[in-house]
Image (cartoon, rainbow, N blue to C red):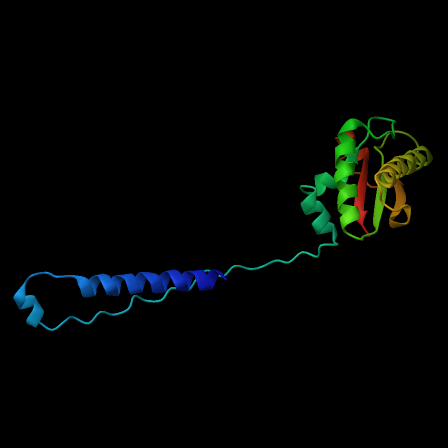
Length: 173
């Protein structure tokens, strides 16, 4: 389509130049008897190629794009908490709307920071993942389309930033 626009503009410019040069009257009789110089067409330029990237509308990339990047697929929790706060509700509402439009299954990952025992953090990650799932189900997403998993403190994103590790992550299955 980009090539067609380029060629259309190019042909219009050439046509306009030919019409204007044919209508020109210099008033000089000597010029009328002189042979017209040959006009060579300007060299054709290649239109830049645009690589088209198609994204599967039912993929993680599509969810991340709709949510404004990977951060949009994350919900953060306060220390030792698993309740969905007001900042998370907007993210989860957008995810629920996308899931209702697109028939996809997702996995909600529950994560914790490194404080606490492994067993405690696995249980807390499970409560966080289920809190996200319950919110999505309350927004109209079928419970059968949402699976949960807890990683506890086993998969930290950032060792120095505890807030980034206390999260729920929605991943397209």
